[in-house]
Image (cartoon, rainbow, N blue to C red; front, top):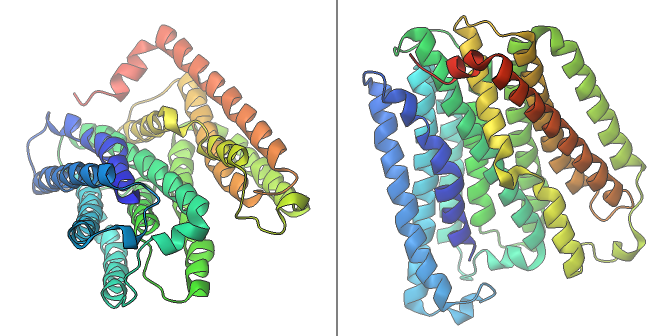
Length: 404
């Protein structure tokens, strides 16, 4: 059941990096924003863990491919309650992210408010459409045709949200150090993009779990192929912009190399997307794929995000960015490491889009191979620089992740 997967992802992949924000806050006096963050963080944990337990019980009783006709009235009522719990959990996580950013600067609340209002309006529309649904069908109407796409967008949004949450927690370190555990008055562009990436990513996770109840099949197709697709691209663009501004602030002289890297990735993207021809075997029905091909897609699309490497890297990048703004100076070796961390993040996020665009095309295998090797190569360089930095300049890393 997709609801169980949503609560499981929220509990394991999102709440954990969100709770990292408690670590620097424990060393500082409580403020209104810190208290609000603590309250909504605990509320998010409750609204996620408790429904996860109930979803697990229901999932044991019914198989994943069960239709609405196989569900009796009491279980249908429980599933409806889980849907409302998903609404509450999603909104609570969004408010928690805004509170975490408000600990850094209260004006981030003003930045997040318009987007939160838009999300609340869309949620109200989804609820209204669901209540007007006289045919009594749920997400199964979407999963019959768009199962692979919904799973891809759900995995993408959950990974990006997890990464962005870790970035917010990391940026809190340097900002508390700079302001001496008080709210800072400066406004960071990287933190703003990261906050937006969290909110949009959470929204996309929810919509992939509980798609809007649209009666016409053509409208449902557009909801997946247009709305969800471009929302996913927006989420990736926001987290990439956050990483770009953070890396450009720290590395400075490496900005030229970052621009060159972006240009190379863009040229490779356009070449592979627009020069590739559809694979002859999948032109008739691109949605039906063999199990082996589907498994290969899953391995190629997820990349290395499931290892947690990119979450740690983005958190380190945002922590370095905020510490650098606090006045700490970094060596050239540290800046080189930050640049390659950004290169890994940019390459992987671009790969996630590219794999989707070249699906069922002749260049798909080469794209998966080339981009995968590029990510592994960049990760090895970043890890090598990190090990060298630990041996030569251990105080730089120690000062980055300490508030005192």
